[in-house]
Each structure stands twice: as structure tokens, then as C-alpha cells.
Image (tube, rainbow over all chains, first blue to last red; front, side, top):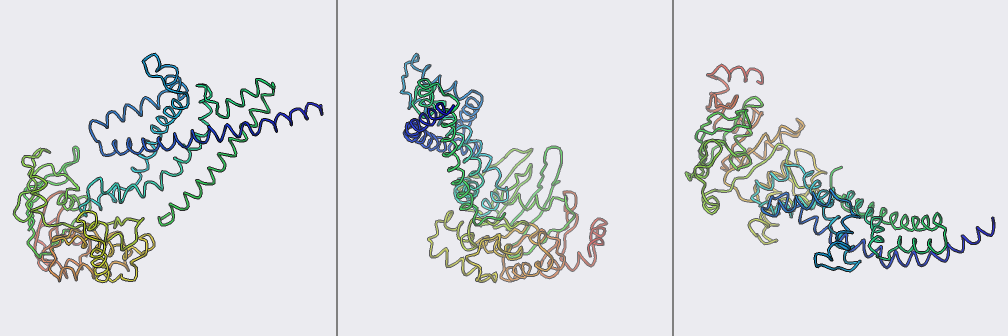
Length: 225
Length: 250
């Protein structure tokens, strides 16, 4: 019994750094890059839909529908394993970033759209009565207020994304989950290793949750409760 | 300055405005009174395109800016024409609609800076002047949610005035205020009227109408029932519906 525990502690300590390294080398950059591109896409899509910019509004609706209606894993497989037969061959990491960005873009656009719509109609009317165009209103009046509303759900997306990056393992990215799988294959201690990986994910996500609270405070400073 | 001919508005199957004819001369203060649902606010809001009329013609400064029939535009003047011909129309809302994420001063400066590209300094100077005019110059760096309703509405008036409008529309400006805060807003509106501003006010404040209005228009059920000077209308209402309404509130 005690021998086994010693072995397990050894495995856990030996694997900690490799897991953390994979996390820092892949999981974190993957998350940050994909979220950055994803939010950019989300903004554009949300504004295109709100302002009804034809013909882009139709494309936007189609995009959101497809992405939200298909599993992320399937999307990643299509990009990495499927596209080569159509002549487009992308690296694993590139495919992962594209896949995650498109996903964040679709869900994020609905979050941003919802946040914009939550701002009372009266704000639009006041700006209109003052002679401001829709774009000017969005820029100076609506978006600054909408951002505050969008922070909790967008933070949620970000935290979810950290965990979703584990799917990149399926398209050969050696991020943290993939490394956990590899070490398990060597040591045959799935419970301990996957739990260890889970704990590291938990630490990342908890840190992000603290950041989220800070951001909510900072953006909610002046606004009525 | 404003002439409305045969204004119709329907929302789906509900006809809210049934052929309104109304004109407002330069410098006139016209108060529109009537029961809720009579279409007063809708009429006001159609002047600055917050509502699109189903039919009728709108003239501003004798320039036809809107001509519609059956919910379609018969004549649509170009944006250029509208902006050349239309004197600025300012509006004050029942629920103030101040921008909560900006200070009072920033609220007032925003539109001139963004729409008219007024430089920061002149915008600031004029904003401070307007704040002074409405009696709130010590609140310039406060955020709207911290102000009382009466203060917020006065800021809203200053904000509308910052665009130097020639016509001011007021949509039940005091209806959302606690009674003791109403007077300070009416005071600002009275002094504005004395300065010669053309004002169209939808209100329930009969005292204000009596004191300040040149004309009072009574609307009910989408129609203008009666209009007259405040003295005549309040003292000797002609139509039955006018009498019924006035008896309930005075």
C-alpha cells in the first residue's frame, strides 16, 4: 500500500512540470489567441446583425447558425483532417486557433448582441434626437454601456475556452490534456494524472474568475445598480 | 414653423393618429393635453422621426420634409435637403434618457462634439453656460444616476439645448418626477419660453399650460378635439369630451 502511494506521489511530482509546461506553452496561448480573434469576429458579427448591414447580415446569421449547431470537435476535425482533401492543409495549432476563434466568434456575437439589446431603447432615442447617427450612437453611447453587461458572459466564454482547448488533443496538439494522456499511457495511473490535469485547469480558471470580478467592478463603477 | 397636415399613424390594426392638423408658429409655446392613449406622444415623436407616420405631410419652415400615404413615402427629400431646411429640433423625454456612463458635462458636450465636430474647448464652454442656465453648475462632474429626477431632467434640457435647436419638443417632461421636483423643471421651461423658444409640450401640468402656453391643444383618441388659448380652453371648453377631461383633472 505504502509503496504504491510512494510511486503515485513520484508520478505526480514528475508529471507536474511537463503538464504545467504544456499548459503554458499551448493551453494558455491557444486560449488567449483564439479568444482575441474570436471576440473581434464576435463584435463584427454582432454589429453587422444589429445594424442590418446587407448582404453581410445574411452571411452572419448563416455563420452563427452553423457554428452553434455543430459540435466543436467535429468542426476541429473538419478543419484539420477534412480540409486537406479540398486542397487546404493547415497545421494542428493553426487549425485549433481557427476552430476555436470561429466558435468564440459565433457564441460571443450572441452575447454581444444580447448586451447591446439590453441597453434601453431610450438611449438610442436620445442620441437620435440629438442628431447622432446609428454608428455614432453605438460607439459613444451604447457599446460603452454594453461592454459592462457583456463582461460576465464573455468571461464565462473565456473560462469555458480554457477547458475546450483540451479538444485540440484530438487534432494532435500536444497541449496539457494530450500530455496527460501520454503520461497515463506510460504509467497506467489515469485517475491521478487526469485529476492532476484537472487541478491545473482549475487553478487557471479560478485565477480567471478573480480577474472577471475585478473587471466587473471596474466597468460597473459609475452605472446605476 | 411646423405644419402638420392629415397625419395618420397606425400600429398594426390600431389607429393611433386619425388625421391630425396642427401648426406651430415661431416663438409659440403649444401645450398638448389629453388622456393617455390619445396619441399625443406619438404625434410629438413623429416630428423628429422617432415614429414613422403612416400618412400625411410634415412641413418644417414651409419645407416639405415628409409626405407619406399608406405607410409609403410619396416624396422623400434628400438628407441634404432635410439637414439644410430643418432647423434643429431638440427633444426632452419623460424618462430623461441621460447617458449614465458619462458625467453631466460630458453628456451635454457629446452631441456637439460628435455631430457638429465642435472643438473640445467651445463645447465645454457652452456646456458650462447651459448648466449654469439650468442651475446646476456645481454638478458638472457628477454621474447622472447620482442626481435627483428634477436635476436629471434639467441636465436633459441643457443637453438638448447644446445643439442650439430652434424648436424644443417636450414629451411629458415632468410625469416621472416626484411632485416636489416638478417646479424646478417647469421653471427652466418657463424661462426658455420667455426667451422666445418655439416649444411643443405634451404635459399634464395644467398650471404650466395656463401660465406659459400661447395655445393649448386637446387630443383624444387620435384626434384634435379642440384648441384655443389656455384662458379660453380651460374656462370655456366647447366640446363635450374636453369638458369631461378637464373636469377630471382640474
